Image 1 (tube, helix red, strand yellow):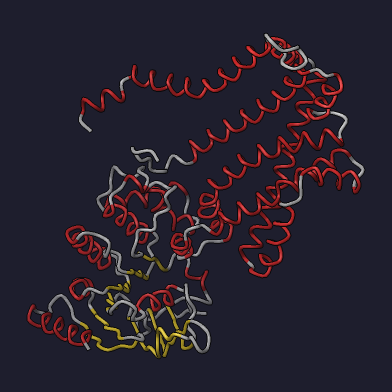
Image 2 (cartoon, rainbow over the protein chains, first blue to last red; image 1 turned 90 degrees about the horizontal axis):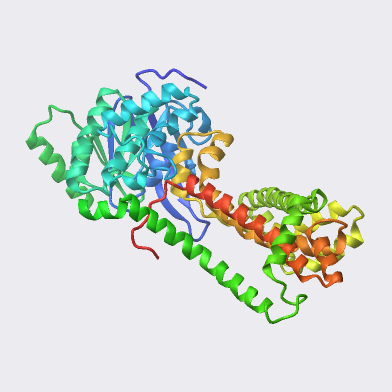
Amino acid sequence: MRDIVTQAEPAIHLGHVSKVFGKAGTAYRAVDGLDLDVRPGQMLALLGKTGCGKSTIFNMIAGLTEPSSGTVRVSGRDPFRDFDSFRGKMAIVFQSDRLLPWRTAIQNVELGLEMLEVPATERRAAAQTWLTKLGLGGHENDYPHALSGGMRQRVSIARAFATNANTLLCDEPFSALDESTAGKLRAEFVRLVKENGKTAVFITHSISEALEIGDRIVVLKRPAKIAYDVSFDADTGREERELIRSRIGEVLAV
Amino acid sequence: MSDAARQIVTSPDNKLFAAAKRLGTSVLPFVAVILVWQFASLFFPRFLFPSLIDVFWRCIEIFSSGAMFGDVVATILRILAGLAGAFIVGGALALLMVRSRAVDNFLSPILTLFQGIPALSWVVFAIIWFHGVEFRIFFIMVMTTLPAFTFQVLGALRAMSKDLMEMVFSFRPTRTKLFRVMIAPAILPDILTAWKVNLGNASRVVVVAELVGATGGVGYQLLQQQQLFDMAGALAWTLQLVFFVLIVQGALTLIENVAFRYRAVSERAI
C-alpha cells in the first residue's frame, strides 16, 4: 500500500468500471466500462442528465458503493476496501447540506476534525477560521434550523474544507439554492479549491455551472460512459467557451 | 413581529402571567379530582372514601417511618432495575435486529408473542421457575417491558436519516465515534419517549409482582391495606408510586428540554 502519490499518477483513477444494480433478470447497468483519470489539482465537472449514473460514480469514488467490476483508485488506494485509510483525506459536499441538527454550526464544522482526533482547542480554532472565511462569523452557535439554506450550505462547505482533505467530492451542492446565492457560493468555492490546491470532482447537470467551476468537463451518457471530454483554463476565451457550451448541448441532446 | 408586539410578549409581567396560566392549567385537573373525592368523603363511609386529610397524614407517616419509606425505596429500585435491564437487553437485541435480517425475522415473532402474555402470567411463571424474590421481580419487570423497549429502539435505529449517516460515514468514523456523534443523538428522543411510556407500565407491573411474590414494597403494603380494609392506607401507598412516576417524568421532560433545544419551534401549534 503506497502513501506517496507521484505527480504522474492520477489522483483519481477509474479503470473499466461497471456498476450493476439488482439481480439477474431485473439488473440495471448504471455505469458501463468507464475509464477516467483525474490528475492532482484538477477540477473536474461531471456533467450529465438525471439518471445517467453521475451519483453512482460519485459514490464509488467516495467509497460508499463498490463497483461490480473494474478498479477505482483514489491516491492509489481502493476507496471502498481501504475505507478507513481515507480518514481525513477525502471530503464531500452533498446536494443537501446534511448538517447534524443537534449540533451548532461550529460543531458541525468540527465533525471531520473530531474523526481525526484533533485536540478540541485546535479544531475549534480551525472551524472558526473556516466559518469566518465563508462569511458566517457570528453564527457559530446557531443551530441549523436557525440558518438560511445558503448559510447551511456554507457550513457544509466549511465542514468539507476544515479537514484539509486532498480530494473534494461535490454532488450538485448548489442546486437547491437560488441562482444569486448559488453564483456567489460557486465563486467562493472555486477560489478556495484553487487556493488550497485540492483535487475536486464536481457533479452537476448545469452546463453553465460546469463551465464556471471546472477546468475539465466530462459529459456522461446513460449508462455512464464518456460522451465528451474537454479541458480548458482561465485563458480560454469567451468564443471558445461558447463553442464548448454548444458542443456539450449537442452531446446531451443526442 | 413589530418591536411593540415583541415587547408585549416578552415583558416580565406577561411572562409571569403566562407561567401562572400554565401552572394553573396543569394543576386544575388535580384540584378537581381532590375536590370531588373530598366531597364524596362527606357522604360515604370512611372505608370507601376516606377524607384526604387522613390520606395526607398517612403519607407523612410513610415518609417519616424508616421501615415504611424503605418499602417505597425498594419498589423504586425494583422499577429502575427492571427498566434498566430491559433497556440494556432490548437495546442490544434491537442492534442485532437492525444489523441482520435473519435475527430480525427470528426475534420479531418471539417479542410479539411476549407482548401478548399478561403481566400476571409472568408473575405465575416467575414464582414457579425461580426461588429468589428479588430475581423473580426483576425477571417479571424485564419480560413485561422488554418487547416495548426493543421495538422502540429498533424503530429509532431504522428511522435514522440515511443521508446523515452517509455524511458521517464519509469522514470514516470509528464505531465508537459513529455511535457518539450520530447514532446516540439521533435515537435519544425515541429512547426518552420509550422510558416515559415504560415507566408507567413498570410502576403498574411492579405492584402486581409485589402483591404476589414479595414480602416488602408498595405492592406488599397494598395487600396489607386490602386485608385491613384500610382505604386511606391503600391510597397513601398508591400515591407513593404516583409521586415517583411524576418526579421521574418531570426529570425526563427536563432532560428533553435541555437535550432537544436544537429543535425548531413553530409559532403555530399542532
